[in-house]
Amino acid sequence: MRCLYRICFAYLLLPFMMFCGCGAFGRCEATQQMTPLLIAVNDAPVPFRGSDGLVHLVYELWLTNMSSGEADVEEVEVIGDGAVLEKLDTTGVSHHLQPAGLRESSEVLARGTQSILFLNVVLPNGTQIPKQLLHRIKAHYSAAPPGQQEFVESGGATTPDLQPVMEISAPLRGDGYISADSCCESTRHMRAAMPINGRVYVAQRYAVDWEQLDASNRIYSGPREKLESYTIFGKPVYAVADGVVAVVVTGLPEQTPGKYPANISIEEADGNSIIEDLGGHHFACYAHMQSASIRFHRGDRVKRGQIIGLVGNSGNSVAPHLHFHVMSSELSLASNGLPYQIDEFKITGATPGTKAFDEAEEKGEPITVTPVSPPRVVRDSLPLDQLIVSWTPR
Ligand SMILES: [Zn+2]
Image (cartoon, rainbow, N blue to C red; front, side, top):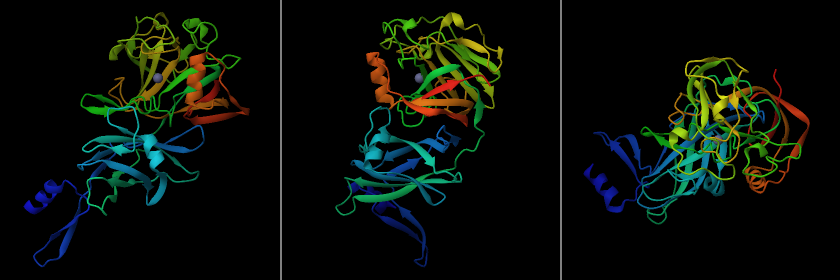
């Protein structure tokens, strides 16, 4: 044992060696292999159906570089019950891997550091949900001896969490809503990994910032800093299911659109908001509403489809919108984000993506919309990112 210890610390190199525990007769009983990258999944994915009709597995893979040099992740394969479900090359990894605590992505893990790989594994049509997921990672370790720097290891075994996905109704009514920063490639919500109470939570993993277009495909017309310029401002927000009000925040002012407010505390980040207990450890968060529009108190019962407030721009918000998500507890940050499926909606179009959306919002110009004609009626699905959606009460 002392010898192994010395090898590790003399070179701090690592993998590259296999050790056998040998019995009295020299028979190898077990293999011991250095694994310079620790691979782990903390929150197993909950499979859900996206509005593309496909099943998605969204989760985070934690990588810890235990070597004394850089680890350059070159390839990641997600394996479900032995079959490769997803493969990220270096470019894919560089877009999805973020050093812990940072919002910029990089395929390189500095020595002795941890990064999070944000994954969206889409199952091909007809594929069974795998019983087990495993990850095979090829990386280049600069501290390893020449000729041994490329190393492949497997880990992060996890079992998809087959808890029922909550079915809800829409939080808004009408036409022209945009599912901004929704699942599964947009970074704002899905990668909001927050260190809270001693662990990391991604409460907003499936959050959407709902905005609304006018007849000219503008998010607002008129002065940007005026709340009433925004199509969505003042629109009613509806309870998505029967439930009990768990948390209410009111009394916060409307922010001036166009810039994020300075010095917003964690408690005020959601603005005037309601967290509704939907039962079964599912909680809906409706954020950034108008203070005077909320007339509920903790413990009040609400019915599916009941108006619970009006869209505003309170809290940490740059423009009037409804931030909506479902999570595992009434704590807005110390929660695990959970998927949900909306009973019915119509997709009438799609934007080119987040970048185009942000530019249109910044400049106050119409956004380019690719129409879906005739509109596609979608049932029991989570609206994916940057779709134009219509809702009518069922
Ligand atoms: Zn949001």
